[in-house]
Length: 314
Length: 303
Image (tube, rainbow over all chains, first blue to last red; front, side):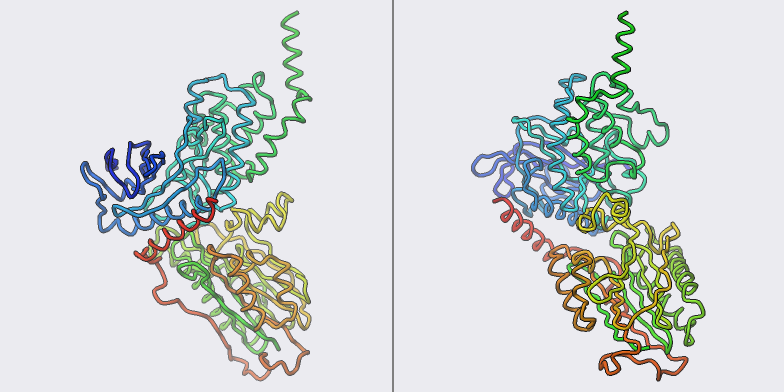
C-alpha cells in the first residue's frame, strides 16, 4: 500500500472569504477543520473539503493539487460534501452542530459551523475514568438521541458517532459533531472514496457489508459510546469481535454498579447482528426512558446479589 | 381482451432515469413490466433495461398467442433476467454488480398473475380501494408486518429504500408470486416504482384512480407525487391498466385485441436515454447551484 499523503493546513492568519484562520482543530480523511474568526471576531469552525487520497496541498500551497485522473472522484466526493451541507442546513436542533455558511474558495468548498465551547465526551471520560454515573449516561444520550432522530429524519446516517464526536457544551447539553462520514441513507456511494470508521465504535456492517447500513448502524456506535463511558475506554472493535468475540457484555461486567436495564440496553445496541439491534432512535429512546418503571423493581439479579452479600456478611 | 393502458416514466429531480417500463400484448395475453435500477450501484439503469427487455422478448417468443403457464413464464423470465444481468456483469468485468427491482404482471383469460423482487409495487385497485398489493422486499416492510412501524411511519423511515431482494448481484433474488387473481371489469392494475407510491401513500393512490381513467389520472398523480417529493424526488414510473373486458364497449382509447393476428405482438418500451450510463460529472453550474441551495436552506432554517 502506498504511504498515505498528508495535507498541509491553511496557515494561521490566512484570510478565507470573510473568516480569519486561527488554527487547525482536526484532520480527517476527507477534510480539515479549522478554528477561525468572522468579521465580528466570533469564533467559528470551518470544515474544508480535502480528501487525502485525491487532493494534495503541500507546504506553502493554498489550492490543492488534484491529478487529472482523480478529478471525477474529487467532484463526486464534493457532491457528498454538498449532501452533508444540505442535510445539516435543514437541521436546526440544539443537539446537532449548526451550519452557518457554505462557500467556495481555493478550488474546493468550505462549510462554516458554529464553534462550540466545552469539551468532548472523550475528554470527559478520560477525566472521570470509571466514575461516570448512570444518570449522566442516560441524560447525555437521551438528549443526544433527540438530535440523532432529526438527523435520521433527514435520511442521513452519521456513521462516525464516538465520544470524540460528542461535544458537551458548558451547559451540559450534548452536540453531535463531525458529519464527515455521514451519508445519505440512499445515497450514491463513490467507488473511489474509501469509507472510514473508528475501531471500537463502528458497526460490523461498516467493515463487511456497507449495503446493510441503516439507522441500526448508528445505534451500534451509540451503544459502544455508552459502553466506553462505563469502561473508560473503547470496546473491542466489531471486526475483531466477529473473529474472536472477547467483549464482555455490559450486563456481566457491571451488574452491581449500574441498573440492569441500562446494561441490557447497551448490550442490545452492540449486538453484532444488525437485525437484533434497536431499529430506530425512537425505540432506543423508549428503552432509555424506561428507568422509572425498573428503578422500583429490583431485578432477580439484584435480589440474588443482595442475597449473596448478606450470606457473606453472616 | 379489452383494456386501456397508460405508461409514463419521469426523471424526478435525479440526474438520470434508472427506471424502465414496458408493456406488450398478443391477442390473448398482456404483459406489463417495470424495473427500478438501483441508485447505489453502478449502471442500475442497465440492469433495469436488461430485465425489461428480457421479459418482453420472452413474452414475444412464448405468447403465441397464449402463455401455456403464466406462473412458469414469470418464474423462468425473472430468473433468466437475473442471470442475464449477472452475465453482463461478468462479461464486462464490472466492479459492482448492477441491480434492479422488478415487478411483472401477465393478464390472460381475465386472470392476473404477477411476481416481483424489491420495492416496486403492483396494486390491484377496485373503485376507490386497494384490493391487494405486493409486499416490498424491504426491512421496513418487515417492520410494518411485525407491527414495529405503521404504514404511515414506513413512508418516512430513513431505510425505506433499502431492499433485500433484486435482480442482479451475487445473491439469487427472492421472488414472490401472486395468486391467480380473477379481474372484474373496471379494475385497475397499477405497476409503479417507489418514486411514485412513496410520496403518495396507498389511500391517495387508490382515490386518484377511482375513476378508472388511467390516461388522465396517471399524469395528474405523477404531478402530485413529484410535488410532494420536492427536492429529493426520485425517478417515478407507472404502468396502469384499466381492465374493461365485456364492458365499456365503446371506450375510445381502449385496445381491443380480438382482431389481432395470432402471431402479432405490440410492444412499447423506452430505450436508453442519450448519454445514459455513467453519471455525468458535477459541472461548474452544478456546484454553484448546490452552494446557492445550501445557503438558501441555511437562511431559511436559521430563524
